[in-house]
Image 1: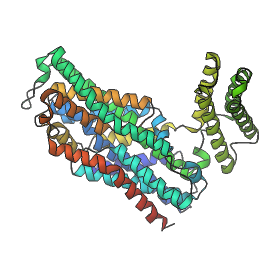
Image 2 (image 1 turned 180 degrees about the vertical axis):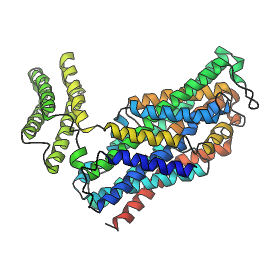
Image 3 (image 1 turned 90 degrees about the vertical axis):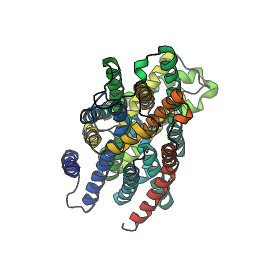
Image 4 (image 1 turned 60 degrees about the horizontal axis):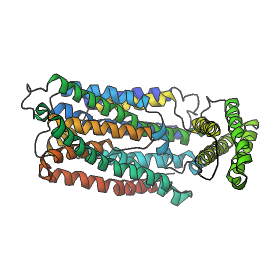
Length: 482
């Protein structure tokens, strides 16, 4: 049944993806086959991500008897679906910035296909392996490691460089979030235990008929909903970023910039950005260099618009690069402590670089819809293996109401905050560490199952190096067939 659902989903979603593109690709081109393989692989990754990570959201409501699995899992799938739509594209663009995109766009599409397939296949293999063993493992760690490994292989053969600053920023987010989850869960559990002193919250359900009180049940369903929604808003964006990487690789002229934003709109934004720069030059005579640099770059970009910046692929590449430079310089200028700037000029600069950022950082609605469907449907199968580990094996006793609610409140808050900051975060590790923290707060370290924690920690430590090595090896292998 699961295989049939997966096949039906892949066919329907591929048709959704390809309808907007059929007029853009030469159907006789042999690269088309590779294009479809890449599309199918990114959908498969997001599908696997759905059933791999869903357990984190539904484990608490299932093991506290708040909802039956046949209700909890589809409910979580729906909210994962909605989360992708509401999440924006900040995390997706953060994923894209790990890849040497400028160099990639100037090479044959076969090279980009090798990179994409190496990243996706290595991610899927590791996710499926840990899922089969019932070990909660981070899809985010998996994907980031694969992207770094693929990018290292790409830069070795074709030049460019891995965006190590972005990798460090994402790495810190992935490392610190479970530590925060553990600590926050301990504090919240102590508050519930010593301040609220609600005995009903610490009941361990026994048997199928032992269901939580109405208010506890509503609390647990609410936290499950929030974790599912924020999981979609964060993890779903990773799929959006991967799909945009495929589209930029195969159809750069169409997807390197957002063509729905007209040249005139971009020109108006650049003119708006120039106005505060004129003011800054009069009040910052000793620190004029960065202001003059930004002004010169804006003038250059305005000339490109006059020269049909959205014409040939080469022109679009250059235009994208210059828009990114203008955006970066305006942002740095607005945050430069050495520059004296009024509130009005600061607001104008901020609005300008945010508007320009949308020219390069975007995703069509049908891309978001395709990823939403993949994540939502994937949520509805394969959840049981991880649920058993989360609900029964992290601690030495069954999950109680307070522990489940604590872990999910902290998890939802952490994931939601990370999405707002545009940082990918591991739902798996945040929830697992949250449950561990809640267990420790109630029964001390002896309340934890050391064997399970060792397996989770081992997966945490091994995921990055294994996925880096696997993606690097696959990229080198796929190159042989170019």
